[in-house]
Amino acid sequence: MKNFIFMFLLLNSCLLMAVFPDLNFEEACEKAKASNKIIIVDFYTVWCGPCKKLDKTTWKDKKVISWLTKYSVSLKVDAEKQKQLAKKYKVKAYPTIIFIDILQKEMGRIVGYRNAQDFISEATQILDGKDNLTRAKDKFLSGDKNDPRNIMKYARVLRQERKYDKALKKFLWCFDHAVDTKGFSGVRRSFLLSDIYSMKEEYPLAVVELKNRMLVCKNELQQKPDNQNLYDLIALTDTLKEQHHLVEIYSFFKKQQLGAYKKKLGTYLLDYLLSQKKYNDIIDDTPNILKHITKKIDRFHENKKMGFYSEDITPYMKNNIVKTGGKYYEVLLAIGNKAQATLLAKKIIIFYPKVATYQTLITHAKNIQDKEAENFLREKVISLLQSEQQKTHK
Image (cartoon, rainbow, N blue to C red; front, side, top):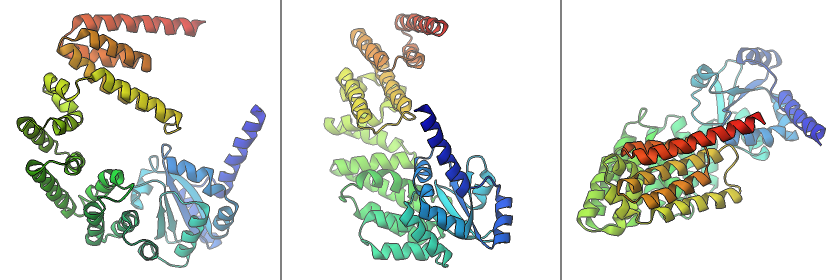
């Protein structure tokens, strides 16, 4: 069985090597010039999921291999190792597949994962002389012109082609008019805002427009609070890194005794409230801390069981829960509820029994100078380390 797996992995590696020979960029250009072919560069990173998917599917497809072999000299470039080349071709997302002529001028690019059929279709269009903008416009016009996902894709190409005014208008339309589009709310408050904000250097008006919308949300929350404006404000202030507006709204909710909205906002302001030692506000926003963390742990296990978390990302997700639990551990110690604090610490340690977990809890105990809790945790760390050493020696 082990020999079979080894041979399978070796075969896959050989397939990639056949399509992407071990050449540097200059060597690929020379080879392309000699054989009258174009150069195709797959810019990737080792952590990029869609890049890995390309390797496992598209680059192993027989028709794709045939197309690449016939028309191009292809190479894979780790964008984080060859930064100058990535900078030269303005690579900002992964994977980015760039088509280059023998004069080293870009003919077109494909950004993101494509299956074999879509790759061949787009690659053929690029080879036939259709530029990025023409291809994107054709694709946009052939689809649902009111679908914000299609509009976003078109806007990204407009931006790549430096059509900043048109790109911004398309992006803002998605934010302003796709509020109720099913399955788009998460994208709207994350990737869409990120796309707009990333234009700040090239087109400062993008930031102005985001700030205008942030202030509108803030004003409307003070007139008539609602969840839509609340979550939009949270997303906008996070994107613009202007948290003080959230703090002001939090104070407004508290003054107006709008408890439900204050609690929702409080979870997003946990770090700020902790830094200001507003422990009573945190307790008011999250009265049952143990239940709150238990829900997070249960949700993690559910998502893990459903395959949402790979082995690479699992430690990161666990550590995030530990960090949040550590903050609430500090709160419980600060208000003198040691019984609940101890239960919370045990739950967190059982969930992720690592030295780093103890260190997180110790840090929060030190923040409020609780020597008893700090010393107890240190003893547990020593015991854990001794146990691990004994296992190593066996």
